[in-house]
Image (cartoon, rainbow, N blue to C red):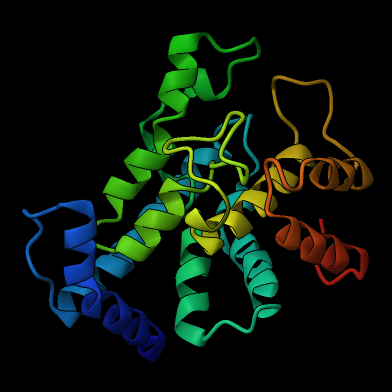
Length: 230
């Protein structure tokens, strides 16, 4: 485990200057390997706390926030033969992609009725909050910030209305897996969860608009081959 953490820490540390330049975060102090490792462990601790909070909310399935989601994303990433460090970063991003929701009140997350415009605005701030929580890990921050973008840059995507390859590839993977799990999980705002076949049909219907077509195609194959289980 220590060597895995060290590999990710090294990757993040070497790109810190690029992160500060791109995001204009000039007040972020340089980080050491030791500090990076400590922060990564802290991020995992926050993720575990987040999962505990979500288990207490009727509106969310804790399956989304732990190792299972990271494992599913990892299986999709394998189709592109990512190197080990990149896969670890995407897996960590998947594990805590909704971490920003710890700042959203439970009554909004669990609301049965349609959200007001103000409540929608609050919900849509969670990717930005999540990005802030994981600084200076800019790879993780980007994955979290952009996991609700739409592939065509239109529709209801947020926060930056990126499209296509502008969206980090890991975010595009997380978007598909997150949507499938949301559809097949119980939610307070609908009578029942989608059946697996219904959820896959929705993904296929929305590929090229909301979702990356290649990611959807790979995901559907893996589910149908039972390499990913609901």
